[in-house]
Each structure stands twice: as structure tokens, then as C-alpha cells.
Image 1 (cartoon, rainbow, N blue to C red):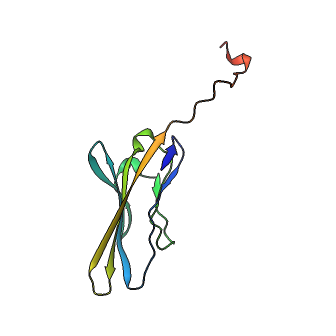
Image 2 (image 1 turned 180 degrees about the vertical axis):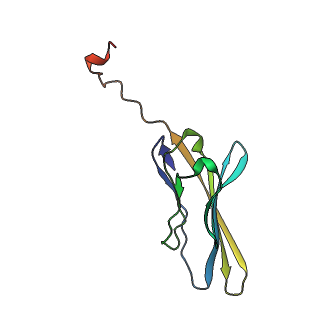
Image 3 (image 1 turned 90 degrees about the vertical axis):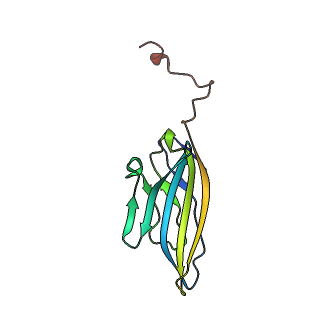
Length: 126
């Protein structure tokens, strides 16, 4: 997915909820420059944002079962990277099932004005 600097983007992660499987934990991590950091974790005790640079800028839908997508707001250039959504479910026989999906996020600068665009003459001379 692509986002624009200072804009927002949604990194998709969805599944079909099924009978007998309860979501235990949901986590989002990001890989940049070959290091992986966990950004967000949702477990029995609530939502935790583990990377301070994402605090106040990321959220995951609370009341839509099957939607674990990550919304990132106020995008910064260093937010580009590989984002992995990992969901762990517990089944009725108490076994755990894990699935993950990775999405590449590219943040680009705001499009420069096209060359045909003319500055008002008052701006030519400070």
C-alpha cells in the first residue's frame, strides 16, 4: 500500500470469523533495515502500543470482528517498511492457530506541483 507524507493509510488484515475460534492475540510488527519491532498488540488486557513513535498515530478497529487492519495517521517518511499482522486464535479444544500476512508500505512525499503551474507574480520577489 502507498501513503502520502502526513496523510493516512490502512494496512489491510482481515479474516472470516468462524465458530469455535476465539481471537487470543493480534499483533502488528514492522521490519525496517533488517530489524523487526512490534508496534501494536491486542490481548486479554487490552490494546498496547509498544513503539513510542507510533503512539497516537495507529489504531485497529475494535468492534468489527475479522478486521484487524492497521490505520496509520500522520505518516512520516520512516514509516515505510514491511508490516506484519499476526493473529492467534484458540480453538474449542484449546489448541492455538497462528496466521500472519505481510504488507509493504511505501510513504511518498506530497506530489510536487506540475511544471505548468504558475506562481502568482507577487511570490516571485520576496
